[in-house]
Length: 194
Image 1: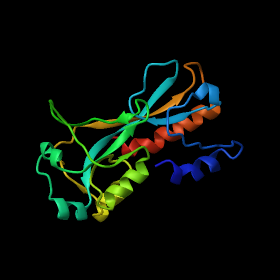
Image 2: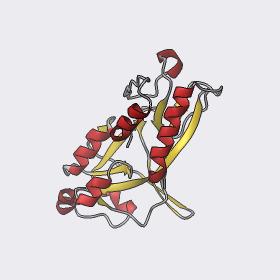
Image 3: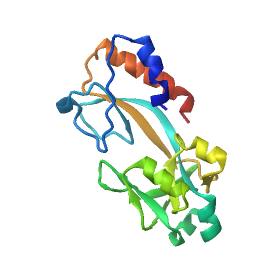
Image 4: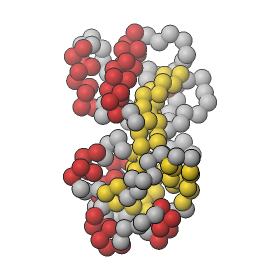
């Protein structure tokens, strides 16, 4: 979502130098001299200032080749008999729990499978290659769903969402360059919010 739009930010602010660093974990913004971090997930209590950019739906998906081989689960509870691809929570260092939400109903489901990933792009690629069922964020897989490379399994359970935050080191007034970048991120995120 952000990378394709960065040329606009650079054109708008040609005197700024923007360095993008991808970190597998939360990192320490102050110690590392970072102005802003863009982070998925609930933010733990800290002295950092956090701005919610959007919430995106959590989808349960599989490739048509996997579904042809193993059959399509008709309910979330059926996932206990499927190869479910796990994704590591970088803050807790263990796989995210799977749950399904709709209206006031929450259904936790215990899943297992031979693959666990810490990198979302690799996880999505393995899922699209037929490795199993995965829970992914709607933001980022729209093209795979539209092309048919991935199939959403439970559209009748649309309630689980995951937040995306912009985080900065303090609650004090931030420099103009940081506010400009935060405003830019908010504008980009607005159309994707659910």
